[in-house]
Image: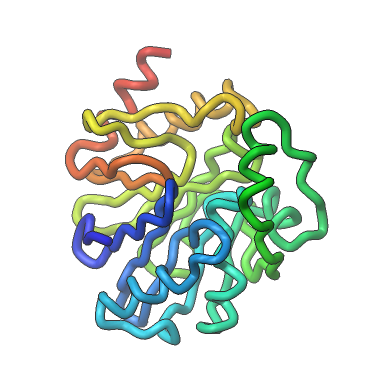
Length: 225
């Protein structure tokens, strides 16, 4: 666990990152990692000198199991509201079943227990401010139809990119693997759109955070086409 910027704690859970954000009235989680690891998220919240009961909102970038695996347990323990895009909400709630896994994802599904379904308390349908002060939602389809990124108004802007892009060790960004991305053209358009925004830092579901001039890294990547 590490503090990426003031009050933003990166929580590595296996190969994926979740985030705890300390805000004036408690704690906001962004994604929750793989199933069975909710306790690690809870320990990270406690390490920030907060309690799990202070978590009032869980923002989900998309429905994939490695991002929503702990949401049911953390919601039970905290009473937090769950926020996601309306297009991904039916997969999170279980109203719609995910398509059968193929290739590499079939291997992952065989070793990872399925996440427990949960209600979505706030289903987003448009970009803009959400119910949590300081956060703006940006629909970034491509990886999934309802993929969301969230921009926090802090320290020059902190982008929670989810799997709209990944972070490289070089301080640049990369695309998500083709095999787990629904629409590659839409993904690239979303990266370009994020580059039009203003933010200093970016954190990712997979890969290393970018702490300076992050929006410029998105613009550079989009320019390569």
